[in-house]
Image 1 (cartoon, rainbow, N blue to C red):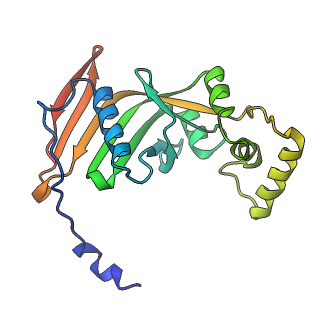
Image 2: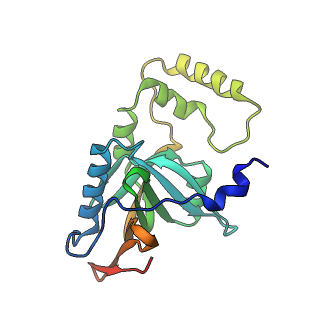
Image 3: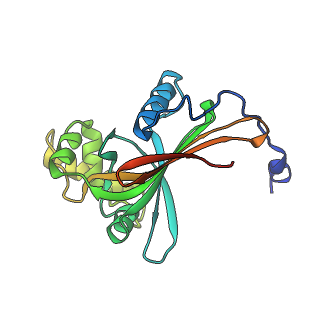
Length: 215
């Protein structure tokens, strides 16, 4: 074991950058998220659009992975992927997920939970055709989450589909968007002495109930 394993418990940080209170936060969680995401972009944090997606399979084992948010509005949070991937298959069997954004530099976390649905074919087509050519070919080349013998498989597939489609690859039928429709949000702001600020928003009869949680 490395030396860090013996000292990992000693790594500590005092969170003192900002605060989050009921008076200074938005009544609607989407507005609060929009503000915090904009502040993360303005602060030039590393990949402010990266989020962890947690799903649960039929065996009740949870799994997580990092993806990039590609859109958000009153309907929900959108990302794109291979529908045949592990997350795609797990969402097919259990259409609920949790998302998490962690903006380390701002000492902030946003957690979002809700039901997941596929976006329309038109939305998936529009986003797919906005991607760089290499990314569009990559969507055909990668049998995501499947076992392959080596990287050469991906390279060969990319060459095959690149030659087949040239500059106009269509969207693969197995590739498209998911939208998480939130019914619960939590905004976490690190504070000194581990007395962090946590505001939870839950949907009740079409209205958002905002409550403070103990850290």
